[in-house]
Image (cartoon, one colour):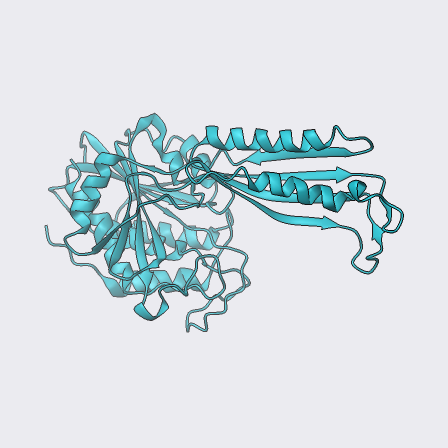
Length: 378
């Protein structure tokens, strides 16, 4: 079936949301806009978790496809100078405004398609940016009634030029954790304190050992903060030096093992005379690794090559993404990374920065990819 993609409609939705960014689970204006558009397109929906919107196009089919778009912004002051820049102190610096616009643009063509062989669930998800939105939405039962057989999401990706899509089978993203540690000694004047009792030196040694835990096949470990003392009193050693860091791994098991090794490193130094150590960690279990289903990979690739340049991704990205939650009931999922940078901006257009922009020409490609996924899924 040949679809007419209303790009004026999609761009208007995109710009409206971009101008009015809202943080996780505060997306009231965005949710209201989505509900209005679903009503106009005669799509039934439910509101879940306050600002989440779940539309359903029930064709009475045996299979159901879920399409997901996240919708929250970040607490970043925009510096793009776009005519439709943010009107408040927040910013859509991760492209969620584009995700919503593309999904609304695609959904408008599903209702009257009599040849559609699947039901379609449209999930507009709040709180992806650190608020466990995916896990919370899945716990509302979105994967049932009717049961979801496959899920697809698009994330705009500035590493790729518009007209390109990045595809990968298997692990695409990682699970993330943070650790916070502390070393305490007697402290004192630098002229009197033995070097071995300097908490900063001890933390530097600990950081070096933590760095050695890096394994390209399993994880990425980074010490990101070391703090101690008063910068105006450089001849005084504080009693305490704190250290924090980030661990990203390709499986929850690998992350747990790495974190336990970090605890062991702190414990070893805590055995020293007059040295106290402490360390704790947190694993963001609501953000398990995104694992693209191999069969869906072949399916999506067969669709994409018809209109897009395909970039075959070789290694997982060290990003956390809660789309991974939509594998409940072992239903397969797939996330496509849609190029969104004009040729002049490739390599200089990073996500989560005040200058991030989406090339609006990319929106049409996302709409088409969503539509092709639903229409051709069997």
